[in-house]
Length: 463
Figure 1: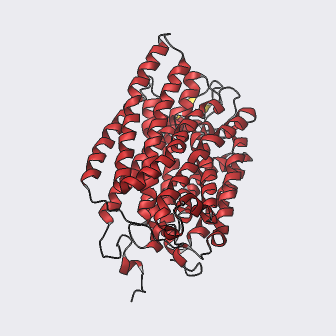
Figure 2 (figure 1 turned 180 degrees about the vertical axis):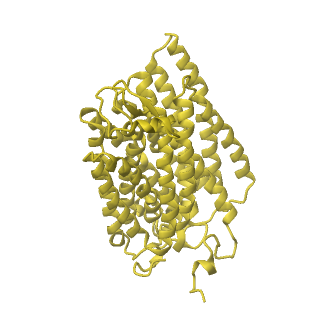
Figure 3 (figure 1 turned 60 degrees about the vertical axis):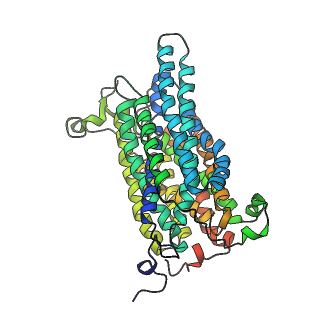
């Protein structure tokens, strides 16, 4: 016989009034697929501009800066508008803004054509593309500000972390296909950056129509701390919640680590054409004649190396590790306390980064892929822990946590600067420090929140 409030009785997606929200959950999860696809393309764009404009790694990190700047600038307005317009209105607004950013890549491409004709500078074209990146990110901010917390209220509160990780698994699928698309359009003989972004713009317009017609109820989160009744000053109320404040900081450092590792993945797998440094040991010549030959090219030294397009394809393999981590992590979070799983994964990622820093050849290469697996649950789990028990203030709190994504704009530039001065392996000391903070937050969360785990689930008994 099932225990009270077990998943078999309540269901992951059943509300207290008995309504099953699985269709709404599936529809919202499609948004996670969308921004995973967009982020996956962004993550393989750095090396393209390094090659085309002869940028340093620190300079090419401006792609991440523009992307996460969009999140920073739009996070609070998105939270405010979501509170006024509700969950559905916030989602539709985000989709329309993503469409605007996608279509902007058409004039940006025209500006690049002018720069190639000598009528404007290459830097002007670069800035034009960065504007499109920033606009899309601003739209994604609406979607993340709304969709992340919305998944936590589409069923029993005790399974909030499980639902958000399931939804984020769709994000992982999008991230797998993003680099594949990027490899086709960014590293071909005639790069056409605008094509995938215009396609995204058309798709999101269709999604906006579907959401307009769909059932997306405005459900409130539980108010475990009674913030709804204490004071109209929302920010003041949130400042009294250490688990929220430290959650914002943890998200800042996590996204900083993620953006750095994702953005410099191609650099990690290829030869630095300026210094000749590579993390990879000697690649057997036989690999260049088998099914993997499309990944390699013969370098100036006559040896086989991973090409830029090949590394972009390998990024999809890394995101498969990421997706597997999300799927398995969702299962673990049903059995074990969310903060304990997050803490363990944080420590394991510190180990991965230190192994990369030490440059142990293939061990370091495999550690890059392992880091994707252990990063998988971090964003959604930090999100769920940070907004725990905030009731009607969840949308406001969500905006601040999304705003913390600004870490992805700042620290990758530091990682790139270290890599420029030393080598790519040394740059991984930055994400190592970031993951250490995430682990600290996770293990200290019960003290910050005065709860044993999400909604009082005992840490010894799991979910």
